[in-house]
Image (tube, rainbow, N blue to C red; front, side):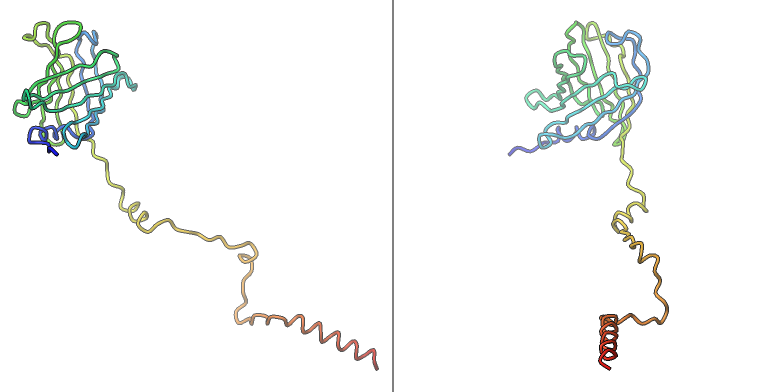
Length: 213
């Protein structure tokens, strides 16, 4: 079976859970623009031949936009490709381009006319910058959205909680009410089994002997 190559491994810089702040510039998608936040989850799929992205944009505390993308490498054209679907309900988009140093640049014509270009600046293992631009002719570009994302790393459990999990839950056995109220006297001997029955039998024998006299 074929194995992913060096070109595929370069997509590993995108893999992980990310979050960060965004700035939306006035554009055909958002005439007013404004601040936003984003959550991005990227994971390997197809045994390392592609990266799947799930994206959420949050504004005023509400998720207002969702997207789903698939990144892969086309060896026939020596290009990186992203297929994209989002909650705006349009047809799937196909973005193509190359990795220029630490900058992945992918572009696509827009259905309504003009061009769209997205780029990821891979600034380090735990951060990257994102830029979306639009152009009427493919030469003059203006920003539509900018984002700065940091990798989200889940914190390990606290030490006390880890020790408790290792020991397992503490089991408490509740004492019965009579046993809880009764205290054994120090030095008291336990009653012998059957002693009460022997005393009753002896008393009956004495009564029978008294009647015979």
